[in-house]
Length: 268
Image (cartoon, rainbow, N blue to C red; front, top):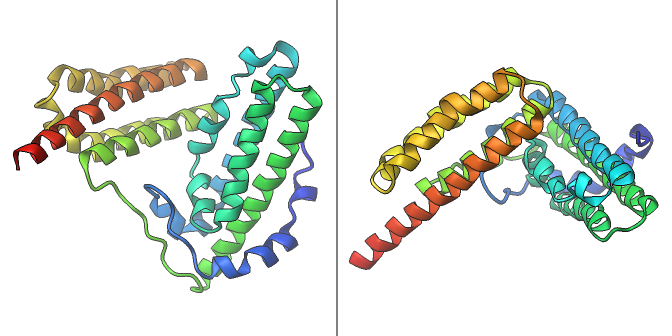
C-alpha cells in the first residue's frame, strides 16, 4: 500500500504546532547519538529511515492480508521503530508527536493481534504513516532552527556503567538489522565493528571475571558469525535471528554485571 505521503505531510500545520517546542528541545529518554546535534547533516538518512519503516510495516500488513497474523509478526513493528536514528531525533525535539508514533505503532500491532479486519488495520496504518510524515516535517523544521543557532544543544547521553553499555550495544545491533534490511551491508558491518570496538571491549574485563566463555562466544559473534552472515548475503531473518541470539547473551551478561554490583554493595 502506498500512502499519499506528501498530501498527508501537513508541513504548515506541523510548523505552527512545533514552533514553541523546537525552541526548547527536550532531552531524550535513554542513550542519544550525536546526530541529534547535526540534524541537517542527517536529514537524508532520516528520510530513508522513514521510507524504510513505512515499507516494513506495509509488508507486514500485506502478509496479514494474504497469510494471517502469524505470518505478519505484528510484534516486530516496535523493533523496526527502535532500530532507526529518527527515533531519537523526534524524541529529542517533540515528545507529543513521539508519543503519537508509539500510539500508531501499537494501533497497527493491536489491530493485527486482535484479528481485526484488513480495512481496520489499513486505517491504523494510514494514521501511523501520517504521523511519521508529520514527524519528519518536525525534524526538518528543528534542523533549520538548529542551523540558525536558535536551539540549545541536546544532551547526548552515553552509558555511564558497564550494564548501561550493554543496553547501548543491543540498540546498536537493532540498527545493524535495519541497515542490512535497507540493503546497506557495508554500513551494517561498520555498526558491528563500532559496537565491538567502542563499547564491548570496554566491558570485557569486568565480564571475563564472571563468565569467560560467554565473553569468548560474544567475541566470535561480533567478529565472525555476524559479519559472515552479512557478507555472505544471508536473509534479513537470518541476520535478525543471529542478532536476537546475541542480545539474549548480552542480557545474560548484564545480569552478571548487576549481580556483581549488588555483591559489592553488600560488602561495602
